[in-house]
Image (cartoon, rainbow, N blue to C red; front, top):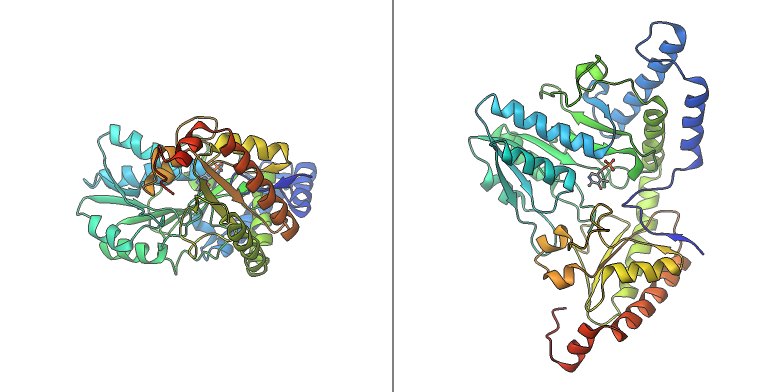
Length: 395
Ligand SMILES: *Cc1c(COP(=O)(O)O)cnc(C)c1O
């Protein structure tokens, strides 16, 4: 049996998406900047994809810029807003402690370039408070960047309220919506968003393709210089199969949004309930305001990496946090931001479900996880100390 429960790391592409991409690779080979017919056919596919992606988030086609993925979109949005701010003497940036590294590392670089960064707390439930954003805004604030949903714990942020506070103060508001897109509804106008990052491979599209929405009137500076593609904001011949695949995957997931949300959140709740039966375990992040497929647990006395390996041997593909941090032995910066102690932040398990998972799989996973946790505790010296009372339980 192979169960894929790591959809926050990346998703499998539906056949219909692969078909669209294959058709592009075979027949839409022209360069969209060329004036001849093959070029113009590619330009037409590009225009249609732009229109389709715009429609999914309530934007205009001219407000969509295609990129190589979520990381590039985040980098460009933040650098561009910071630089545009600096030209007006604004060098203060606001974000949160649990953003994706594509945001946090960009901010850290900018700090070294003379910007001042305020990282807001996310509290124990993993949710930023709009009033904290309001209080942190200053005369010299150039940008606020708060993710729509967190990639590790799945918590959904009050984006609309944060956007309203920024709009009132005339400060650019960017949101990394990479985890949210295709899973919860997004409307850039209603949610007061100025810039929004998307990545195709998190909603059934190909890896290496993304988009950045930039509201009309908000300046966008290029990261990559060269040709005049993407209206001069992003040079490089467009990845037509990737972009067409992204548009197809996005519209497919939006068509099934409500149906999938009801089904997947049912699986999520059943899995959370079953795993909660394990003693000294806790769910990370708010129970209600979270993505439909996200299950994130800490098991005291259990190392996340060991648990992952045991589960993999049982055919279960899960994660111990963000794919970028596993492989390193650092505790998750997201769990530390929730105020969890280091030893607990090491022991997390993230299962991210999709509409392809079944209740049978949930039952299988719960049974295997219970078994693995019991086994790892039996052989753990830390657990022995906890049991003997030589060490205090923190969960
Ligand atoms: C995956 C992810 C990214 C990076 O997207 P890529 O397309 O892999 O570069 C950025 N932000 C969040 C929240 C993500 O989950």
